[in-house]
Length: 452
Image (cartoon, rainbow, N blue to C red; front, side, top):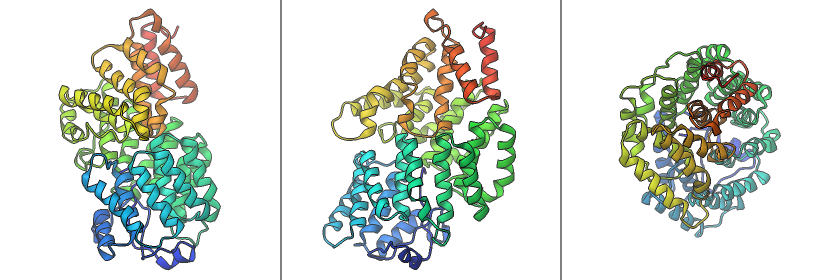
């Protein structure tokens, strides 16, 4: 689950010393790993609320993790809807610090789909309490969902000097900061910070993740493969991020024209990050001409359940890949129809507001590609290609849509689109030199006389 926080035992007194007292003891720790001795995240949250049902920060932590970690929506989940209402009601019955009030408001606002406003509230907390890990991580993940890359970087830059080595989790802040730097193309600075974090804690799977991204963005295939293999024993047990790190490993193999194995846990876990990774990997393999057999049928039972969610447009597009790949028209039609309805609904839900201009054209392009209409794919994607960042995800994850556009342009029949593929490939080669995948696409373009 994207941005999920494992709740592990840490020194409560150290947090008090850092100026972050809570109305009841809370133990939190950022590690991307479930502590099975505490029953994992779900067990931890249950114990947290059972210990003191009126502890408002316990409810804020619990609801925030469910919302940000799994992409659930109060609009769709009655149990979560009630949990958020309970949190708000409890907050009105007891004296809270301003920080606690802001946490409650931020989670409530995020649940309503207004991610930017939730980020503003978390930023208010960080201005007064720069070592509040919960506000830092929640805002970081929300910025990620919004495609706010500079905000994701700068939010950490503003608080980074306050995280001295004596504060618990300070090394993890290096990893969080490194990711924002990487997404805004400060590759050397990002890698340096991530390596500093790994020198302190080699099992920091998020810092491993940053370095995997850096090698991917720079098309350093050999270095990336060597790094992942060398570090694997340190992060393979990070059960909430290991699959995604293996996904990055697989991207290097695709660059080298080797078919990566799809990890069974990508289909089995049901965690949203693993689900979209599975869809993305299968789609990329298909574009490379690899037969994926019945793999789409394996994924579809998981994605079909989310056809009406529309919590994140990034997820919607990947769910659609699965129903199209499995050639099941029912979830395809359901997803498109309900997304269209969501795009016309009133309110402040940022994803619904973006659906009309970006989400729907993107999804329709996937449909047209499956239907063998490359000219229509180009007509739909070319005008929005610089807006797709707004659906969230990383540069590496959204590259699947860049590749879709290039493949469609290569197969266009219209003279209007004759030079689109050539232009896109020249641009890609300039931004990511020495990419074997780009070189293969250029060779394909040459066979249809586009690169002359």
